[in-house]
Length: 199
Image (cartoon, one colour):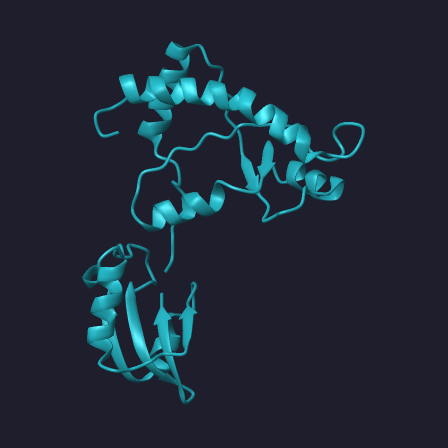
């Protein structure tokens, strides 16, 4: 990342943007409103993958917008194939050899840091979620943004709110995590040993 910062500092030639805008779909035209622009394709920035999404140019634009110095980025991550099929197959094969049972499902992310409410869990089930959690998804988005292949496993530590009597407890999560973690460690060790050479 330092290389990208150094290149930006050099290319911006003394400009000091005070605001960064990340544009989503349909907002690409806003860059045309930037006055006195400096355009730097992501492909020229170390660590920045080139955008392959239609409607997203993959270019950083620095200049002035409504009189304010800005940097405008068009980062956009396609998630239709977030998880690599080859890595998923390798995980399943490793699980079989390690004697670890894997369950597939839809994981819904909540930002936390609180447990979800029973109403949120009913909503998640209605939308097709099999599990919910406060991690995994942001890491997957970042990894895909960086062009990495991804597979993900989650250790399920407790029933969600409204599915069991009583209040959820972080103590229960802490107690159960090592149990699932031991199985996951066994699975990952087998994957490292017998998985594809690209690992």
